[in-house]
Amino acid sequence: MSNEKYILKGTIIHTPTPSAFEIIEDGYLVCSNQTVEYLGESLPEKYQGERLIDYTGKLIIPGMADIHIHAPQYGFRGLGMELDPDSTWTTWFETYSLPEERRYADLEYADKAYDKLISDLLKTSTTRLCLFGTIHREATELLMKKLDAAGFAAFVGKLNMDRNSVEGLEETTEESLEETRQWLEETATLYDHVKPMITPRYIPSCTDACMEGLERLIREFRVPVQSHLSEALDEIEWVKSLKPEIDFYAQGYDMYHMLGDEVPSVMAHCVYPTDEEFALMTQRKNLWVAHCPQSNLHSTGFAAPIRRYLQAGVHVGLGSDMAGSNVLNMFRIIADTMLAGKVYWACKERGDDPYAKKTYITISEAFYLATKGGGSLWGNAGSFEEGFAFDAVVIDDTSLADFNKRTARQRIERVIQLADDRNIVAKYIGGKQVL
Image 1 (cartoon, rainbow, N blue to C red):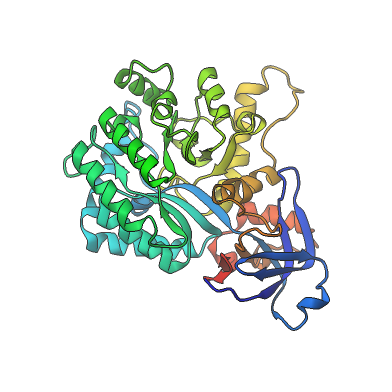
Image 2: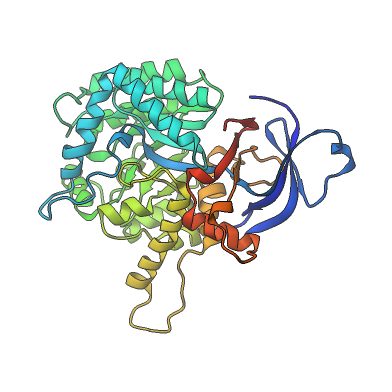
């Protein structure tokens, strides 16, 4: 990526802390060495003469991190949200997800499908991602190559599934581990900003032998982990039946060092933690919860206890969970995070008190989760503080305006509720302009 020094000018909005937006009208943002060197209301003398890109009248926000997305599921987005009332936890997978993922054995299909996904991602506010691939090593490597060429920073996983799959999407334990090792050897250091991530789909898809083998690979290659945790009540019961020796779901990962004790771990959903599971999660300082509000409400009809995780010091970021949700648009995910927080408060915390204190997620908190919250998986990312990765998105909200003068705070609120790819006019990742 370029080491060029340059300056963006515009209305700059970010959330160094979750409690409030920091807004600088007609401010200056200096990129140097792919990182933020300066943010302020005026431009110091030493920067006079540097290249200035003037976005006056537009909003400049940090790039967003989508830390849970199933790349091969993009093809059936918008489908499968209304299954038969008698359906079980596996119905959606057997009807939509697994048949689609099976297609990625065909590299020609994978090439076209991943081109479409990445082309559409470039038009969004997303700059950093954690993606699930499929069991297919070559298709997963192709996805990584395309993400790197587009300029994204990403963790990508080759799925491991040595049980409870469908015909044409099966691996033996030996095949799963051998293909994973080859994939790690080929990609661990291949790209600067696109890296492999160990990805057991979830405990029902992986035997103990597979998990033991993945644990060895984690320790050998020192790569992070991603999977799913406590997404639905029937899923949790299935895990109990498969591993009766554990007391709660998270133990099934922790026993293999996949819950953020040795390497970073991203666990998606985490909707129904028991008290014991929650206590363990708070002890794991390298654990990120990927909150997927739209997907949670679709799949389980309920919201995760995000405020509780935040108060306990657990890292939380946001995920689209494509195609458990319908959109890549992280503005929609932020809005859904606020809505899901209200659902959780009303159902679990308000009780019968009509005057109960509201504790749901605020707009600045939800924005923080989409930017710095998820970006912290990469270290310093998702904010315009000095030394942070220079990820920036420029928004033209003219089409959203009414006939009243609005504050920058009101404008970003409206962007979150209404904006889409048509409002994004430029995007920078790690200092490089990619859109």
